[in-house]
Length: 415
Image 1 (tube, rainbow, N blue to C red):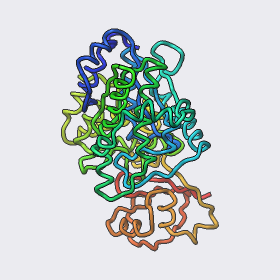
Image 2 (cartoon, rainbow, N blue to C red):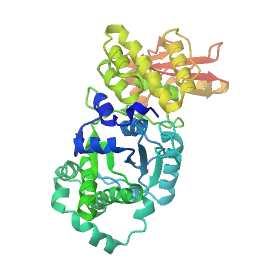
Image 3 (cartoon, rainbow, N blue to C red):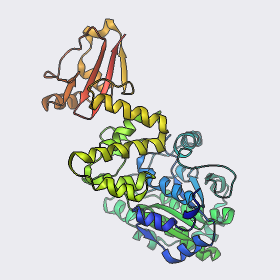
Image 4 (cartoon, one colour):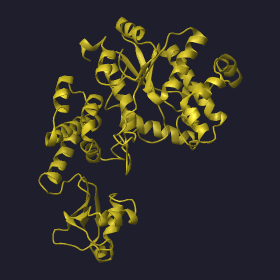
């Protein structure tokens, strides 16, 4: 790792726009300058992949490791059995152990190793599972030793809880226990690994501060909290959500090409922020790129898409995605990495175009396809489709490009 960054972690995060709140900035900075420390971020095990919404935290851990410190990825194998109530309208579906363990294994293989170096070294990343200590807790002893440090009054003051209550949504005792358990995670990691810092998104501030306070009250630990601002699109949506769903980091759920296109299609005003957060490019280069105007901003978007895809899926996948995008958008040809479906020749005359648009994921429903046709956004080999009931017809090349607007495409092959 780069030697000059060993005591510069907070400066880097400040410069790149990662810091929203810090419990004690100056004392934490001094502690980090003493030598290698460990910090962690907790991740749910509720799906088989993390998504772009988790990427801010992963990049914070990446910079922490770049600065010579030890990052810890805490998988919520225990807390995922309960669910975080933060800003949710309803209780999460409870998962069994088999599903949670399967999710953790998929996340370990596909979402962390691209960004962090794991191993046995002093600043190698470490993955832990909070089920290792939560599952064996004795309930009465735990309540006596730690539950007494939590007040319902304070829990009710958290925005995440007030939101649920204002919407008259049920908030069970099970979910209140989530806050206690997450706070205890911090204490346990300090005992086991000397961890002094927990990081996360700004919506996790209350949960993280619980851990800081619990460590102080129960064991006189000096712990720190650091959160990053949640990243939203100009229209107020959380980053990582699209009309098609979550932007997964696992290539089995979202192709590297589609991942590349997510970044390539970002809003112009977001380019500088995204380059700072989700690439490792030097700040002077980012400053030049975010100053580009007009059509030139597209070059900055291509660099953003390539660098972000390279970090997540590797340089070869990033090159392939960039090449495919160039063929589709600049040369007008069909790229090989676009989503592809095959149809047998004997079904051509009985297949409607709407069915192919739905199967390729370009439209979610027949109604969406009708609206797309009406707006002129549905195309077959770059020619507008004028009738939503059009049947599919074959051509001598047996290969077609379907388009939903200017940015979303798929391939249909007749076999």
